[in-house]
Length: 461
Image (tube, rainbow, N blue to C red; front, side, top):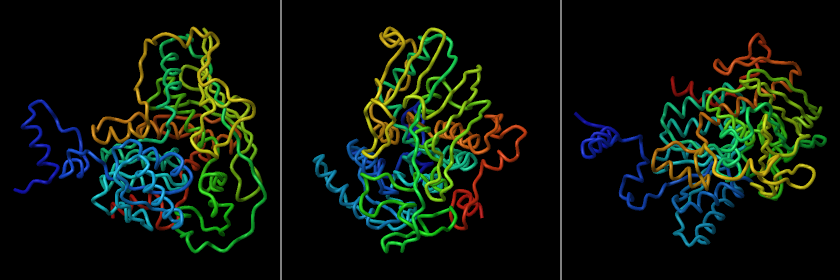
């Protein structure tokens, strides 16, 4: 009776190692002829600003991965990424791998020689390729947020977990020392009973709609739109055709492709909120909010805003652009504040008014000195943590389940801002209680041929 490669490896390793149990599927290249090198073959999906400023250089610098393909619906960006990576390997004095340019992410998913993918696309293109990669047995680095709607996020999370893949959310703040220390001190009881948390996020800007323009010959615009409605092309809606890193792309300010700062920066700071409160699964119980939404159709994400959540234990979480950019935990015995300080993930990241505050601060310096009683997951490099976990099959520092619950908290805040009324949330069922209009906003329609639900339906057919 023939055994599959997976069954053979599992049986062989268990027999020869006694108590050792094969943890999961390790990429073929790691166990094949190249096993001593333990190098991971990676493909880049999405070659824009965050890919160039953060993800591609981050993966190359791990010294553990070889990029073998790049993909973008803008062929100019894909070509630039190939050149960028070749120079990056040479700069690190590493062998320059053969890098192919692919016109569609499905080409990458179909390749059996690729072990893992890095997804650095606009938000509306997160869930579908992540789920497709998981179904194809590939590990995943996925920029935050996990998805564009709660139901979409849940479907992606379940698909990845069922496939037993390693997925790292690009919420890199967990791999920064000050954020880990802040959460360790908070969870060690330094500020006593937590009563309130204040989250400060930047806010976006708007401008009048630009008129329709011809679609550039290098851009597959219909595919770029993906599961979202068909609308006319203008550079304001997509990304600059002149710059990759220096200009924030327009899609960040359009609700078809991004929900705005509440999921943009919010995914980072809510991740630290959940880490500090010790929340792995679950989330808030109540939420209400208000925001200014511009009448423009293109740059139409929320502007100034204020959201208030109630988390278990009657912890009030106050979120607004009026607070300093960062997370402040407030308890009976003082407060601890944590932020990025002056650090940026991308050169064009927005900033809050005023000077950057200290990366780690407290009402009393003693609250953030000494050894905390609670020690949390230690990662000094977010990309390297991902590649190490691909080899070890250990859970990364920001796994998919964590990413889902963080996104859900942000997304229901967006719904509350839209509806401008108090909402009661059941974090177990992931439904609003007694509000069908709010529940109807937990899933977004998908254009035929695109989107995670169309993908999963095709898999079942």
